[in-house]
Length: 178
Image 1 (tube, one colour):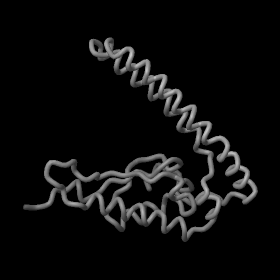
Image 2: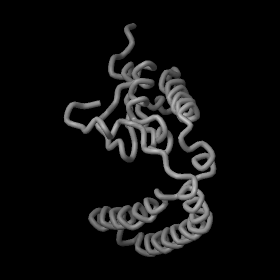
Image 3: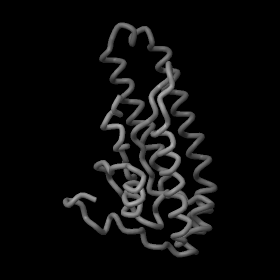
Image 4: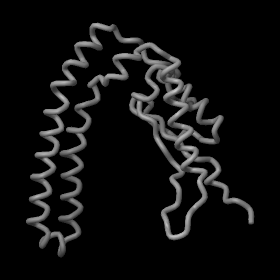
C-alpha cells in the first residue's frame, strides 16, 4: 500500500445482503446474455467497417489509429457494464473469507508458477506482471493480496484497488547471475 492512498480501500468490501445478491444474480442471468449479444453485434459492425476501409488504413496510419481508438472507446464501456453482475460463486460465498483467501492464493500461486518458469527457446518469455480483479479479492481486501503476493516474491504496482491490484514479479527486475 502506498502512503498517498486511503487505507480503507485496501480493506475487505462490506458484506452484501442475501436478498440484494439474489436480485442482482437474477438480473445478471437476464442481462448478461443480452449484453454479450450487443457486444458481439457492435464488434461485428466495427469489424465489417474495418474490413471495408482496409484500403484507407493501408495508406493512412492516422486513420488506423483513429479506428482502433474508436473500437476501444466503443467496446470497453460495453464490457464495463457487466461490473454490477453477480456470479454464482459470489452468491454462494459472500462473506466467506476463507473462500476468498484460497481464491487469491490459488491465483497468485498460478501466476508465480508461470513467472518463474524457465524461458523456452523460440517462445515468448514468461509473463512477469499480473493483475487480480476485484471479484477475486472482494471478501479479503486488497491488503491481503499485497501480503500474499509479497510472500511469493511479487511487488504491488500503482493500481486502482476498486478495480484490480497489479503485481510485478520482483525476480524479473534482477537478471540471474551466470
